Length: 114
Image 1: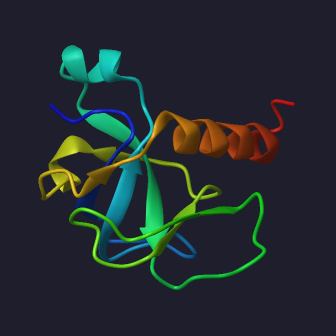
Image 2: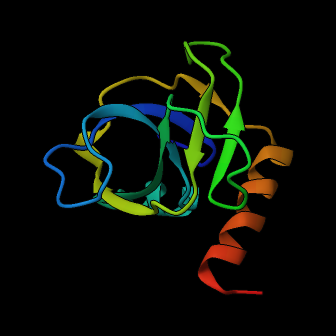
């Protein structure tokens, strides 16, 4: 089962306009509860290996680890729902609770929740 906080490889093509496309790593954002009821879509944040420093709150940097082969920025401003069939790998890595909390704080700013 796909779980919140895990990073997978997904096919984000085709893309439109300024959307992030191609085959890339994505962070699962949505609650595990939706996966338990076999929800057909999943809410993700894409990752990029094109690193940009000082991009707070738009990006969150994670170092390569486990099967995530390169340092990556999580694109916090690119929230997207995708069909579950776009996920094409087993988990590459999983974020810590502290990392997830930092991303949630950035999302609160981006979405105007604070």
